[in-house]
Amino acid sequence: MSELELHRRYPRTGSIPRVELAELPTAVDSVDGLGQKLGIGTLWVKRDDLTAPRYGGNKVRKLEFLLGHALAEEHESVWTVGAVGSHHVLATSLYARQVGLQPHALHFPQPVTDHVREVLYALSTTRPHLDLVDSKHALPVELAKYHVRKWLSRAESPYYIPGGGSSPRGVLGYVNAALELARQIDNGELPVPDAIFVAAGTCGTLAGLQLGCRLADLPTSIVGVRVVDKVLANPLVTANLANRAGKILADYGVEVPRIRARDIEIIDDQIGPGYGEPTSAGREAMRTMDAAAGVELDPTYTAKAFAGLIDYQKKADRPLRDVLYWHTLSSADLGDLVEEADVESDLPEEYQSFFPGKP
Ligand SMILES: Cc1ncc(COP(=O)(O)O)c(C=O)c1O
Image (cartoon, rainbow, N blue to C red; front, side, top):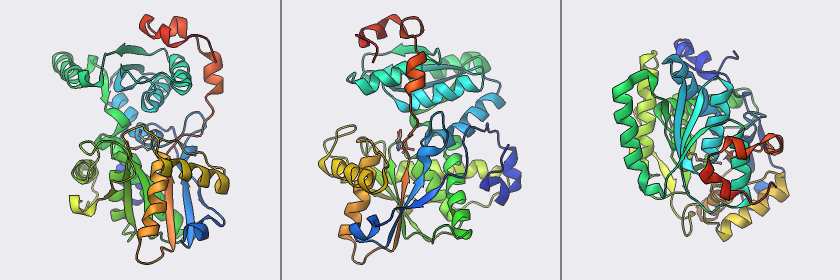
């Protein structure tokens, strides 16, 4: 197993349960010319789209600790939740199956686009157990039912992975990611950035980066760009997640700083009409990044995060010198999985109407 930066700095954390899924460290690239165009010194991109060739993005770092914990607790299956086209459900199911755990998921509806169908094709290859509810408002009741079943049957119940993989265990993946960046700075791969920008959904990525940068004593501002409702993504939720992850680390001898809600910076003005609704600033950010770096952004998360970075600089009193955009979207091609999919036999009856024909 390759040594994580977390383990190098704090050897006792090497015994925190984990499975190895990611190819780390991910690269940090500077994008020639784009910084100047945006009015900053240099724009850097942390390439977490490349965390794993099979399926990358930010889920992989979280799943290393989540699936490791599920195996350590001797579960045979995992259970998670998301919309029918959820990348989180796909990543969780792919990697759960890879490490020998049966994936289960609770799906709620969203408009079925070609992209959603592609995700479902790929998901079907993991032979998941799926339940489809009528609306996301059914989730709290389903979650309560799960906890009652778990209380009654303990280890026989699936290991619960919350939406986005943002539990304290999942956050550890991003504490390590921040320490990995600190190492790259020490190695001279990039200077200390003035600011890091990242999409904030369930806030696990932001929480881990905040705690990891504090552990590494980086003076960098960590800015989350909110892409979901404020009840889900806010400084209180983020600080709470960071502190609960910190508690796990403290059990392994790490001296952990307390993160306060006022330490967390979240930009609220990029979400536009709502979660998943494209914005014109996001579309412009997608075009800008693609033209300058050939990096593809998605309208729901990463385009809004990058648009937040562009807008932040426009409003800043002084030009920022080095700014890092943390790229969290998988760039893996799902083509092979779509090819091998057999949705008729591997997805439940109620999903069949989503597939008028194979793409
Ligand atoms: C591509 C992408 N970026 C960012 C995020 C947000 O990460 P987090 O949920 O940890 O805030 C997600 C969450 O699903 C995502 O899919």
